[in-house]
Amino acid sequence: MTSTTESSVPAGTTSEPVLEVRDLVKHYPLTQGILFKRHVGAVKAVDGVSFDLARGETLGIVGESGCGKSTVAKMLVHLEEPTGGRIAFKGQDITGLSGRGMKSVRRNIQMVFQDPYTSLNPRMTVGDIIGEPFEIHPEVAPKGDRRRKVQDLLDVVGLNPEYINRYPHQFSGGQRQRIGIARGLALQPEVIVADEPVSALDVSVQAQVVNLMERLQSEFELSYVFIAHDLSIVRHISNRVAVMYLGKVVEIGTDTEIYEHPTHPYTQALLSAVPLPDPTDREHRERILLAGDVPSPANPPSGCHFRTRCWKAQEVCARVEPPLAVPEWFRDGGGPTAHPSACHFADESTAPPTGEPGKRPGAPDGGPGSGPGASGRPPEEA
Ligand SMILES: Nc1ncnc2c1ncn2[C@@H]1O[C@H](COP(=O)(O)OP(=O)(O)O)[C@@H](O)[C@H]1O
Ligand code: SF4
Ligand SMILES: [Mg+2]
Image 1: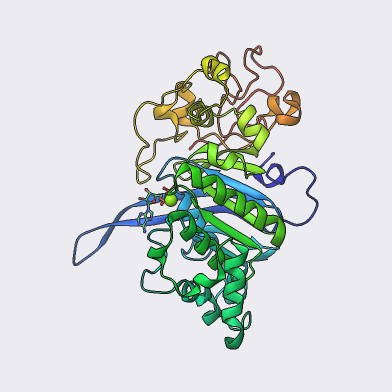
Image 2: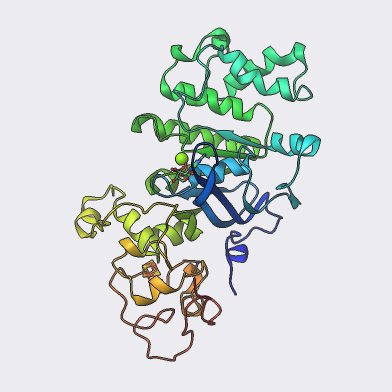
């Protein structure tokens, strides 16, 4: 079976991934009653997410609000405990780590938060905000050295080192996000998990912050998980993109595979909403409007989670959950753009399917590659 494990490692990458995420799950229990709390279900915020992050790579994670992006981010930086699955940092399983072991790994995976207006403590000076991580990790910057280190960090993110005693409200949104990035860099991490770092900023400022992050990436050999709800934002910075829907990755691939050869209907719909600079391209593109809202992760649809909004949905989609894998016909015939897609009818065409699930569209029944999933074996019933 071709799984995300193999196919999510970018071509040309030989070294061990910095992060390996396997079957990551986060379920929040739903309880009822005030005195005697009874479990009545669970919010399946993240429901089996797998990907690799190569050294120096940027993986974009994209999906509508509520699909589990922030929960993945929080588990990566240990702000949330996974319900299941595994996270390895440079080959070491960090899921069950605690104490000193956790502390040293945590240093290497830092987070930049979504909203620069609320994520910085308004009562702390910029110097204290950026230098706060040194309190927990004094080995990175001994006390006498901290002021200089913070000023260096301000300089690195393009802010005047003399601003060290100012407060967050004295800065613009873009400048505040630079402060958040400087804080994320303080402990010299190898991985930065940026949760919608530019979503709250004006469009004109977004590009400046993305450019800064790109510059820092090459300067400090950083690996990024870069989260956004919009495919257009991550295009510029990502080497690969994972598209999430209701707690699962539904398609993952290189930027060319995702932006030019999307095969999952959800990705196709998201892309149809991305503004195109060229007016001729705009005229020729069909806009796909998704019906309805994202269903509740406490009660996701059976089979394919996307089926209630999918214009390609067939009877099988309600019964059988499509695995995230390269469809066999696509792997054999799709050439270099074959990549994993969790759809029984994964196909670059946006037209409703004509053939059997898992088959090359239009291929006669029983031909090579028939049957859903990458292995050619029928997937298990959901
Ligand atoms: N602490 C929590 N308790 C219960 N449900 C939560 C909690 N945090 C997040 N959720 C739910 O999990 C789902 C995914 O949330 P989140 O990861 O924040 O999505 P995103 O970042 O993609 O918008 C949402 O339905 C959200 O309401
Ligand atoms: S498996 Fe079915 S419902 Fe799900 S995305 Fe594919 S066609 Fe749509
Ligand atoms: Mg979020």
